[in-house]
Length: 478
Image 1 (cartoon, one colour):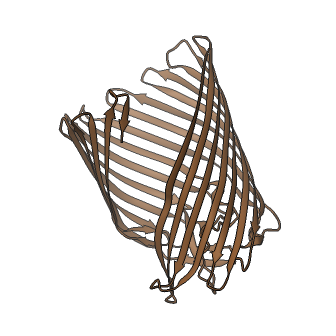
Image 2 (cartoon, one colour; image 1 turned 90 degrees about the vertical axis):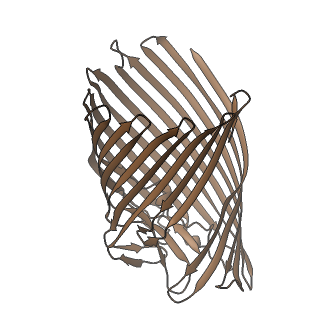
Image 3 (cartoon, helix red, strand yellow; image 1 turned 60 degrees about the horizontal axis):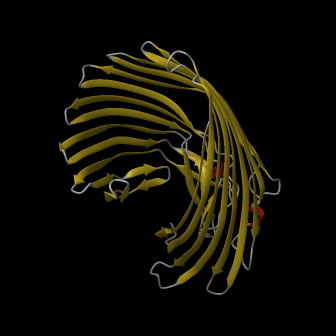
């Protein structure tokens, strides 16, 4: 039997955000703003586990984990007119948030006589609490108001898994089942002050519940000239989101599906230096619980982020064909890909006639496509320096779609079909200098690209990192 225990404490102070932005409206209105958040965070963590091996073929593990994270933010958001001659509003806030996480895990593994032949089972329970409070000061030219809200959510997650692995002459078979039960009750309370911008009728309780049973199987085969991996996951999902009947906009909703998710990877080794590959997969991206929350969040009162309980999963199909050539000091990789996304999840911003508040709400924006190619070259130039450069070019297409943001009042947004040729270039260099010092340089260029509500301009970034081993390689500085 082996036991392990560890505890640690971390204290940090950071400038969490310091962003400047300008909003230009179709009626000619121009507004400038700065968002600044100074954050103080403390982390307290305790973890422990017990291993028990009654014999060489059976093993048990029991582990526990506890974490407390306290976040304190001081925020300032001044709003100005077009030439900064008039301050329209000064929004200040204090965030007081405490997060608790506790997990308990029990697992068992049986090893059969054949090496690599195993049967494993595990159960994990997770509890996560978010206790969050915001206190606002709304400083306007003619008055000052004080508002607040608090939200409490408790997440309960139970995960069960059984996994089986059996080696074969040229590979192995994997199979198993997984089950998840997740429940998140949430309660939001608003405390409006003088001439408050807060929508006090958009609070109350909401309960998130999901059940996900799934089974999977994989077959892996490998010999001198072929690598094959074929798998299938069958997944059933039932999600219910119950909304309190007093909410002024949203009603209870949810979704349900049962479908397979196949994946296939095939590699043909022409010789020791050249290989061809093909890859196909289907995957699902389900909305996070916070993406469907019914409550507006007022850390930025003129750019409100609100959830959408009608949000549905996003399904992706990906096909990739590749060629790789290896040589003594590097390799060359060329690939082509095609990706189809159904129900693209993104935030859509709309405004309501009569005010300048932007409501940023998650929606399913229809079908999107990416078709393109990638080139990557890796080269060891000298014993002390290596470089790689890569480039991607693709056609990004988003089909026409129409959505309706329900909050605060139904607002329709229509987007015509859009398409753009885009790509990126990346360069990385790693240098081993004297006295056990490593230097890393990188540069990235992103071409103009398409997003579901417009376009984003070109971007460029460079990074420099240095790492040095000290104290006879027992520590490092970076």
